[in-house]
Length: 148
Image 1 (cartoon, rainbow, N blue to C red):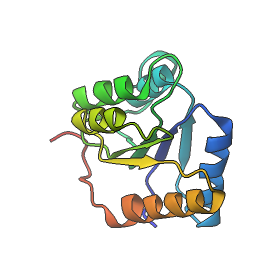
Image 2: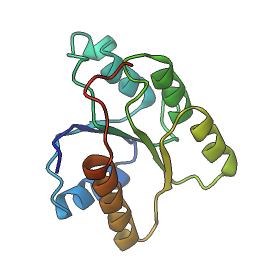
Image 3: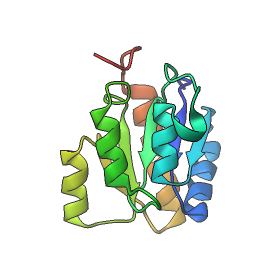
Image 4: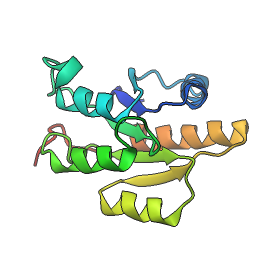
């Protein structure tokens, strides 16, 4: 598979472990960066705060974003990333437990590329992550540069 970085913004260690296990099980060998709250995600992706000096020309191939995050929720992270020219076109998949239509509508209105509800069943969860990986890392085409 194409070797771009995957950023996972997830505060639940159990969900993180399931995602990582699913990627490993399906032989996704991409570099993975796990960020645990919304502020950390913004700082990492924009190269500020604790990540000041990070080479922001190296952007992830995809961001898996939970909505229910500490410090800054996923919708606010999405809004901020879509407002910045360097992160505006990075594919962002909202991967959440929320089945609320309002969350789904807000996510798409703020620029999410996809909205996936985390399955409770482990086998279905692994299959969902596999399908995400196949589509967003192998089939989906993105430009080399992050700004248009």
